[in-house]
Image 1 (cartoon, rainbow, N blue to C red):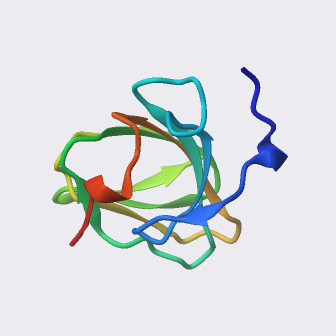
Image 2 (tube, one colour):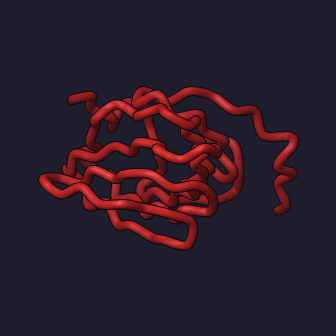
Length: 118
């Protein structure tokens, strides 16, 4: 199955990210995970949140920023990959001049119901 990027509508998640669900069980033949692109505009910060069940992998494809992961904070930039274990508070801040683009793999698939704002 091929998904055309231009055919995927963007939406805003509970944490304030603009997301394109590139693969999700509700819409595609993928079964147990989701794959999305998140975009955080320059100067923006997503809301601190956690997922009780979902493990996430973030892969940064463009831009730079600051990642908060539990009690730690660290710089992120294109090429970096971050694992976010279930139950771990996290958010990102874009402190660069271009959109921060993040590929997000979630297992199980992303759901608003599994997102708790902190």
